[in-house]
Each structure stands twice: as structure tokens, then as C-alpha cells.
Amino acid sequence: MVQEIRDMTRRIVRDELMPLEQQYLASDWATYGAAMENLKGVFDKKIVDRLVSISKDTGLWNMTVPEEHGGTGMGLLAQIVVSEELHYCAVPFPMASVPNILYESTGDQIERFLRPVIAGDKTACFAQTEANAGSDPGGMMQTRATRTEGGWLINGTKMWISNAMSSDIIQVQAVTDAEKRQRGGITMFIVEKGAQGLHIEESGIRTWLGSRSAQYVVHFDNVFVPDGNVLGAVGNGFRLGQRWLTIHDRLLRAPQALGRMQRSLDMSVEWSKQRVTFGKPLSERQAIQWRLVDMHVDIEALRALTYAAAARGDRGEDVRNEASLVKFTAGEWGARTLDHAIQIHGAMGEALELPLTVFYRLLRHMQIGGGTTEMQKMLIARQLLK
Image (cartoon, rainbow, N blue to C red; front, side, top):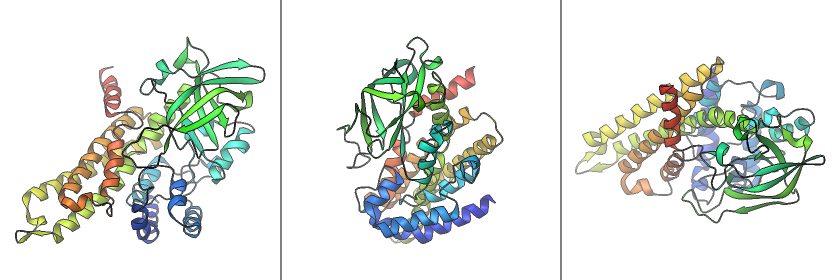
């Protein structure tokens, strides 16, 4: 079953996405952001509609959606295999983008928020990070939610919030009990676009991920949130966020790295056979052969770690430690592999017509986004030394 899904996805990538890659790489959207937003920013409606149709017809659109909400019910391993194939190409593929926290929706939240996001009629983002609360949100979070008649008033500022400007709903964490904090004092709220007192702006901080901002500052100035927009139980919001970050976000970063790493290796092998220097192709130079072998070993090792962790997750085992291990190695080995690829290609490795520099920036960012490599080491060490 998994092999059939891999083969189908690979055909889609080769037949539908690869022919669009040069146009995508030539745009300002070829780095970081939501797939649908990026696609609409580069291609005409006919192309975007075709990709959406393919995604829905093949079932990939609902790949990560649980069966009870109309999804395919694919396990982690199948999701990872599909994601690895899709990230072989720089062009994003449209799929339902549902932050897993939203599956905690109950009652009318399912109709108002969850199902529209699954269908692609609405978009959602997750707001946890603050200027002084990145790696330690539980201990340092300053955004507060206080009780008022019929709901809550939220005050504070979040930053580095991906795709906030284009999102219809924001899942935001706020402190509701300053003494308990992450141990029952942080609550998850759903804030809808257009709410009074909600202000979103570009951070003004330029990064090497591209000239177009995908990261935003979100201000909450006495934003009223009704009780019906509390996601999960009051005081349980930190646990919801951590479960999403530690498993789904971190574990599923690995196939993003694997697809790009495999593509860079394939390109490097082909280039080394074609490029002749001093009368010999690069492929006959031992120094180049060593780089190719190093790339191959890193890919196979990361693939084995990732698949094993996903299989354990599918069996219902706790894979939080494995998720940190996989996230750490994906960033470290991914950036190293792309560095080898760019070096093998020489000056052409820096050409924007090739996907290598885009891949490198995204994989180097993987060492920072979602928890730095140092954080992952700390979590892994804590598990070893307990």
C-alpha cells in the first residue's frame, strides 16, 4: 500500500510539478510560506485549480486528516513517504493545511472552524512564540487572557507567526493562570480574522528565506474571545501546543529534508558525470566521490531513523524523543548534504536557476525553526540521563 502511494506521488511530482519548477524558482515566492499562497502568487488560476483537483482526486488533499473528519486515515509512515516524494521538487503541492491542534474542536467548532479549514475554504495558523518566549514559552509567555462576561479578553504580542496575514483563524496560547502556567495555566483560543483589537503586521526583520515576508507580528489589544472559541479545556492549551510541536511538527520535518537531500544527491551524481575538469569527469575524482558517499550515507541514515520512528508512532508508542532526534538530524545532515551538493556544482551551485540554494536555506532554517538543534540535544540528553 505504501509503495503504491509512493509511486503515485512520484508520478505527480515528475509529470505535474517538475515542469513548473523553473517558473517557480524565478519568482519571489520560492522559499518559505503556505503552499496555496505561494502557488497563487506565481501561477495562473488554471494551473492552481488543476493541482488542487489532482490533490483531491488522489486523496492526497486529506492525507493528514483523520477518518472521522473525512480524511484518508493515513498513518505517519505513509504521510512521511508522500511528503518525501513531494519535497523532491521546489514547487509546493496543495493539501489541506490543518494544524493538528484544531482537531481538538468540539460542538459547533467543528462546523465553524475545522471543516472549512479541511476543505480549504479557510486557513489557520498557530501563535505561540513571543519576543522573549521562544524556546521557553511556558515559563516566559506574557500574553494574557482574563475573564470577562461571556468570554475572555486577550492582551499581548506574538511574533514570528507563520502565515498570520493570510489566515482566517489564529490559534493563540495565552496565560490564564500566572502561577500554574504550563502546568494548567495556559489556554488555547481561536481568534477570528477581523476581531476588534487584533492587529497583524510584518515584523520588519528581513531574513535570508526570501524578500517576501511569511512571518508576522500579531498584536492583541483587548481582543474579546467568546467561551465558545476556547479550544480544548481551559488551562490545557500548553499541552495541546507541545503535542503538535513535539510529534507532528518535528517528526514531519524529516521527509521535507529527505526529499530535498535526495534531489540534491541525484543532481550531484548527474553533474559529476557531465562536468569535465583537467581531462576527467568530476565523478572520477576521489574527493568528489567521498562527498557523494557522505551525502548518500546521511540520506539513508536519516530515512531509517525517520521510518522507524513513524512505524512506532503508528503502533501508538510515545515517540517524542524520537521526534527530537529526527528533527535534529534532519537539520544537521540536511544542511550538510546541500553544502556538499553546492560545492560539487561549483559556481553553478549558487545559480538561482537550480533549486540547491533554496533547498539549502530551508534546511539550514530547519536547524532553528520549531526548536533549535541545541534544544533538541537538550531534550535527547534529558531522556538519556533520566
